[in-house]
Image (cartoon, rainbow, N blue to C red; front, side, top):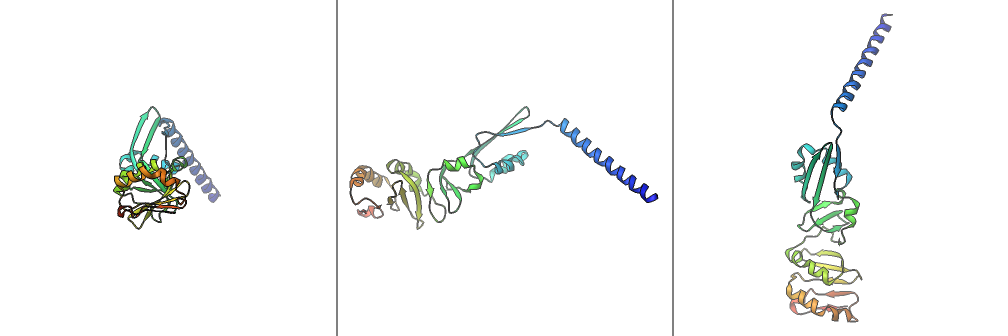
Length: 215
């Protein structure tokens, strides 16, 4: 009889403790306003968004280590928190290394970004290691992309670049990409494209030695 009485007391204490836990939990939720967190025009993956929400109290320091983020803002309005993450401009995506390469040579794993952002990156880097954008390419890539319809790029021997065009023609650039090279291409691109030998590649590697090849 004493054993059963002891079991009943333990049972009642357990039930009371559980009831008190639920009471204080619900009471705390009622007193604490529910906050809705919105990511505005987000380009980052939802898993990364979740990590950011877990670090709202120290968001400035938390995001400092993510160098692909240009800037961010956090605004509270009533029971809403609006977060905007602005990314740097992407240069290319490398599907071997699963990285996004930005114009300042910052790289980041693709799993930080959502699908729409990844699909918006038109240039594909086919280098074995993610491409390094040297000063020549950084300065003149826009001009090159206005001359050629570039779909892929490759960094070769840590010194120069190959361009793969939309028609699968390979353009082999010299190490030095300068105004002299660009003027030559602009002035002669029509003639080059009409050349019946221009079907596979345009070799400009020895351009500064006054030699080019077509095939």
